[in-house]
Image (cartoon, rainbow, N blue to C red):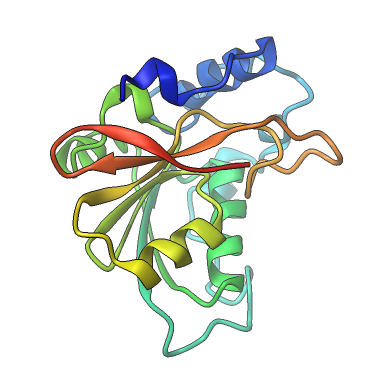
Amino acid sequence: MRLTAAFRPATAAAILALTFSASCGAGGSENTPAPNASSPEVAQAPIAEASAPAPATEAAPAVDPQGPRMVVYKTPTCGCCRAWVEHAQAAGFQVVVRDTSNVDPVKQEHGVPGHLASCHTALVDGYVIEGHVPMEAVKRLLREKPQNIAGLAVPGMPRGSEGMEMGNVKDPYDVIAMGRGGGVSVYSSH
């Protein structure tokens, strides 16, 4: 399947979200202004406060000590990444956060193509999880353990995806399966 067939038509909001994702965690400057002033990213904590790692108990106290270990690479000031980590913790994952000023080398090392990039990259049980992938899709991937899939991606930052909640606003989006041979397909639609 060609990549263009895997995506629904982009809206102006989706284009803005893709533009903003570059400044959020794909190696862009932390001082780059957000293109959408209503984005939750605008109300970030000051950089001096945000550069310190968040306490482990801040996000979700009910983490399953037997749950799968997930390592999340993100920039220290990205609020939507922190929110996605909270979803992962609430879903029972043991999350280790690795704050870095540039997530691009992690994406390259684990074969995430640039057109599927988002603001954070996670590794869990041999799979790469790129962006705001819903926990139900991650759990399905780990339950089914397909050998032909290298990981899942939600390109950009769709409004209403986990970590990108904006009230009742929800953009339709697809979770993309990244094949071990380089191909892509739609894993689920939301």
